[in-house]
Image (cartoon, rainbow, N blue to C red; front, side, top):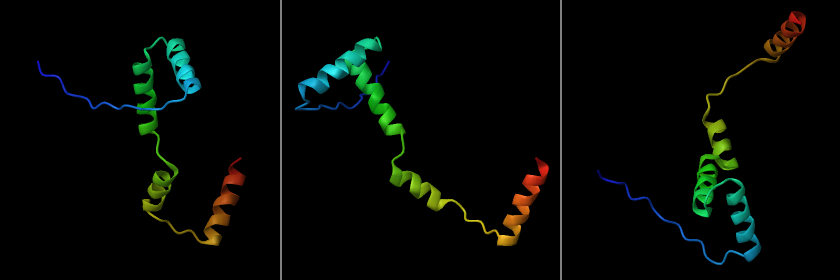
Amino acid sequence: MQYACMPNIQVRDVPDDVHAALVRRAEQAGQSLQQYLSGQLALIAATPTVDELLGRIERRPKGWLSARSALEAIDAERARR
């Protein structure tokens, strides 16, 4: 069986209060500090930045709707209620 080698990250000069808070959170989650931080890093990596979101929006196909069509759609929705 072959195991994939996962990269390591080392963070230096973490303030004592930050370290203590992270240790406390890991304990509350029933995890080691390494497990907790790995999960938090995965969440950070999976969450798009504002620039990434704006880029996605910008790449979406653009539509065009006339003012008349927009007003008709609003009126139709109001009549449906």
